[in-house]
Length: 201
Image (tube, rainbow, N blue to C red; front, side, top):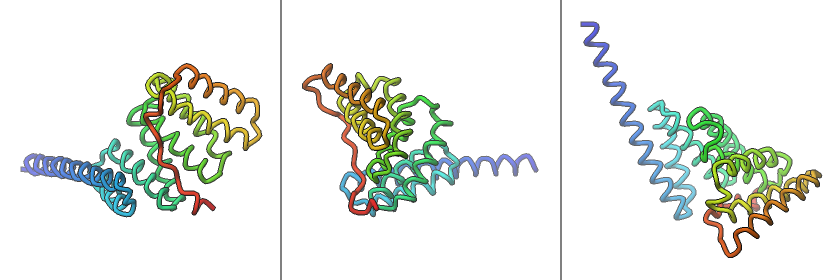
């Protein structure tokens, strides 16, 4: 009898997790749709629901994705402290999900770099750029989207200049120029959404 009760409890828990995971994915898609329409308030609500259900499902992959998406949206809505916290949590969790050298890790490093750069916190952006660019190069972004990478490396160079790291800034600028020279006529496939300047201080 006890074994039967235990098995029923396990099945109910598993079923509940599957339902929550499916719900998390649906709210994530709704969030993506709202973001594309630039309805960030609606996107925030949907990504919050996605995160809640991902946590109920105990799915690290979905929790990481929800925190990453919600963090970005919070930033677009000028909720910078919340954005930074969520993006850092997503970064730490994603390393356990996909490993330190994945495309998802590059995205998270560079999103944090962009958040700090747009807030003119150049010193805080530099370590994220450095790590994100290294991972991006390792996974082949220099071949897949060289101009997008060149744009990121240019930002890195600017951040380095702002923090007085001149020699590394010069090397980064040369790296960005080389990417463009070797891919003349190409355009960036990835163009990031910037964080608003109007509430950056």
